Image (cartoon, rainbow, N blue to C red; front, side):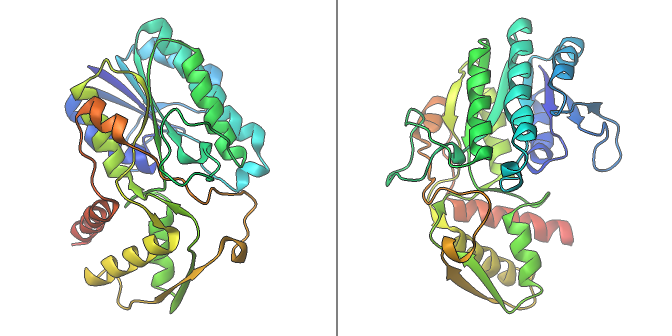
Length: 301
């Protein structure tokens, strides 16, 4: 099949380039029209939603995978129009183009569509109530994709990190190399999910049941706080020689670290429906983190 990947330079997009390549002809797009290594790519800019349907019509893919998004959670509070254009209007335009052509659209959403008041992992049908502009824009994107009709696979994920791009893990590793102590929020609970896990699960889902569209939750298994995640990152990196020293990781409260955007205190997602639909056993978040750290060691050697 022919696959069109949007956001190929992002952390999930970078992982998808490897995971999707064996499935057929992969056409990559970036905002600039070039990949990070300078290789030419198609240009796709979510800030210009009207430009996306002609791209889909011209390339005629069987599958469109949208890994591009506006993900600046705090900045979105000051830039709601930009966030909604990229996260709602652009996916809607893609979905409409895919509905016309018969292509399957794979689109990613977020745990931030929930308000964090639950005490059990959220299921796909649970009521949504975003706390900020970012979550609102991503939820609007889900609605726009669904309203377009056609075939679409919407995957909500959470706490995304990886060896590439800007993310919590890479920030912790940078700060851990500079400081004796890291102060990290300990009263927000969720599931760290690596970009490589998201990419691998997406590729396997497309192979296993490519005609099973719908809304699913896709994260690793288990839960922790940002503080617990930071502790695991630091300990794992130190054990592998990625850090020369291991700083203290101190838990603080959300009120100790105020941010422009409110974040859910609990955003664990129930992944049972995804595993059942596609026959995929998802790993514990610690095992997925180990795999990413091992990847970093291998690339450094």
